[in-house]
Length: 71
Image (tube, rainbow, N blue to C red; front, side, top):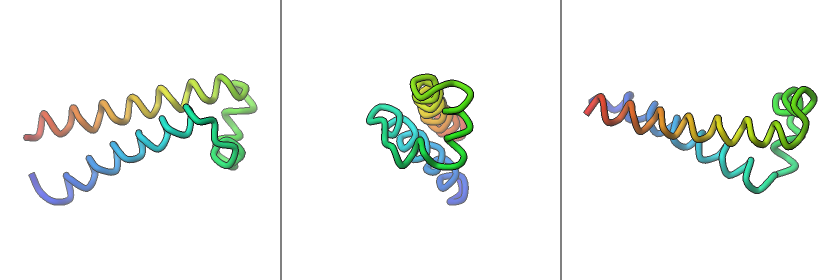
């Protein structure tokens, strides 16, 4: 694997952890941001937390699966 592929995988996994941790700890600065507030408006705060938690898990799994298939 090339260095750029490792970088993309690291970004997937880091973004996933960031999203997952933000949803677990319910950070106000995260859910009051312009982009997240769209989901808060449509889904409510709890729904947005569930959405971003699942998104984080999906990103982490995708990063790990890509790593395992490219290795």
